[in-house]
Length: 279
Image: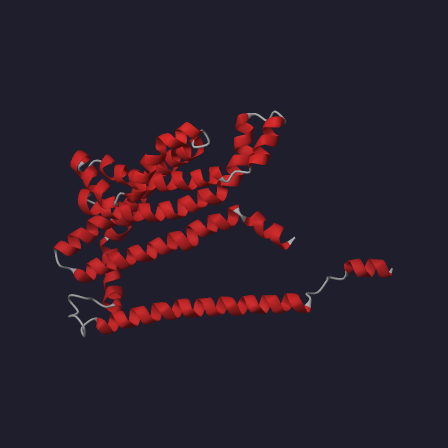
């Protein structure tokens, strides 16, 4: 009877576990406090500078930008422009991700690694503006005009990250799989790809952020729609309140994609790590 009662009792948290949870809560509160304080200070200095350091027409403050935002949404241009930009980055970065992943995996073969090394260096060191201008000169406003610079800037970052993961593969595990006669495609699926998952997510995170900036830069030169196009038009018309509204919207949306969307998928994919660490 006593044993049955012991099994039915729920084990309570120890004093050490409660102390650690309280410390984690305090650390989280401190982190959010300083993050929110940073936004308050930056936006406050910006608002005070508008009309004091520079005229309000030259430096619209956050309050004026908030007032301008509903006007842009009411015209219907907001969602259409963000949709056009997001479609372009998905297409361009999708091609770069496939191409860069294939090149990174092929670096398991030494002569492939030597063949693509200089191309990776050129892609990493070349400014996005160069490829945007090249795309504009060759294709103009055609889709390849914005696909080309996105691919050229981001594929190298993806391939280099995956190549680094390939270099850190556990050689003993690969040799053991070969010794037991494991087929090549199964070694890739069950050993190489799981090992490369953190490197792939790192490549996606940084590649997507860089591709996002290159997309907007390309739209400034070679597009008749999108966020970059709206920035160009508003700056040419000297509508700086509209210009800064598009800029701030771009920042907010980029943070949303990074902090909410990408991190959500990363937590879901690596949820097993938390289970292993708490086991």
